[in-house]
Amino acid sequence: MKTKKIPQRMCLGCQESRPKRELIRIVRSPEGEFSVDTTGKKPGRGAYICPKLECFAAARKSKGLERSFKSQIDKSVYELLEQQLNKLSKAEG
Image 1 (cartoon, rainbow, N blue to C red):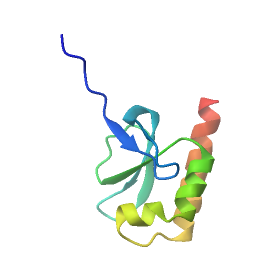
Image 2 (image 1 turned 45 degrees about the vertical axis):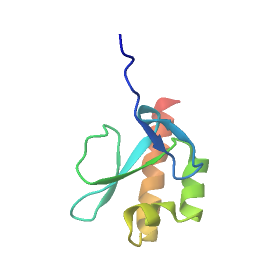
Image 3 (image 1 turned 180 degrees about the vertical axis):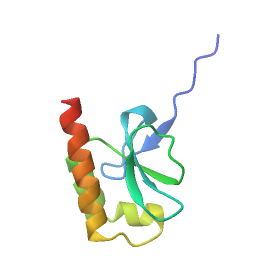
Image 4 (image 1 turned 60 degrees about the horizontal axis):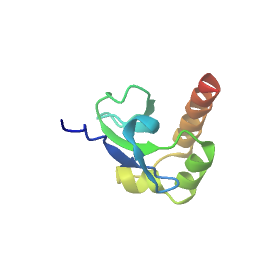
């Protein structure tokens, strides 16, 4: 019997490959809006990050999201994403 392959994605903050289910997907919709995708099924371009605020801060500092989405990201978008990640981390722990 074959073992099922687990999809791997790289975190933009710590640059570690992890199973896709352990990471949080940040999506840019076709309209250009950014949001946190908890289901992994929203349409649009996605980038993955660990559910730790340290990884988010590292991705912000290294401009990992800008490279991934190939566009400039406004400061207010970072603040909104940080608030959404805070809510997720409080809900889990």
